[in-house]
Image (cartoon, rainbow, N blue to C red):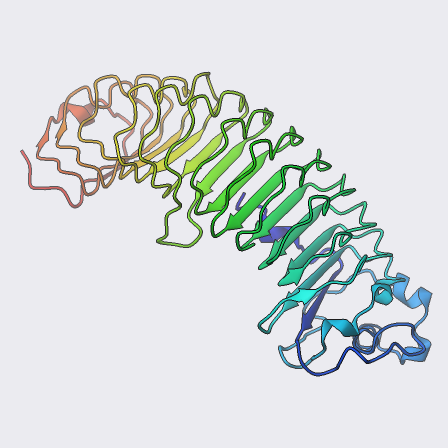
Length: 397
């Protein structure tokens, strides 16, 4: 997920950044002979470097690359209410492939109906601080990436209707907007979904049409996850549930048994700072190709069968999960493990068989446990160990 995020707005695409204020030019300003609003004329004149009367269809269609550096805008240097913009403002920009709206003053901007009519080649769209009408994305049949930041109000159930080519969707800080069960119904090509919200409950069949989903990140104060949320996600490779802000945990209390039963392609799983009370027995009921598993801040130790069906694990984080001891054979199915983090637990002893079978382990973190008795044979069974962290433990024997 981290590899994609902002990188989707590459400079190799056509990129125009508009900075809107809420004061200044009033909505009474009318489009002149260019057929566009006053602020849009000024933007196009600056880009094409011609008077308004000389801007024609050929000028617009020849625009193939505009970066933010080519067209600098400082907050406050352009002031216009959004009422000064019209749906036809983008007509003629048929080569435009990436577009971003960003507000810089308090309040929200309301888009008019069908605001992007004519942008038939648009592939990437980012909206920040926008209230969306029902037909906000009408005509954007080639759109591949959509990011909505700092939105409020409601998301109409059919808001994303027709975006059948959408691959990457990001909801950031959407402030408790209810999500309809049918919101993603037409997005059967979706590969990346990231939802960042202060407090949210996901509908039971929210992802029923997303069989091609590969990356899913839920960031916020979730209290529960629907049992069948991942029922059709057979191609999912990465699933993350994490805090919204650093130092803040979400409120997810448990994961339903068998929750990952159909995620047969899952390679990366992170349940960080989830405030989970406990993990159920049978969390992983089938063999999964997980390469990295991160759990932290459990209220009870993980179940004894947690790792049995995860033979491909390379990296395992069990940080602050209330472990007081390492049960014999706990890692018996994880012979490929190369990094193990057991920091911030309450482990008191290491026996000679604590890490039995971990012949490929190179990094072991036991920082801030309660180790007072360590059998030296525990480490002699780790022939490739290169990094060992025992900081913060009592002076032992």
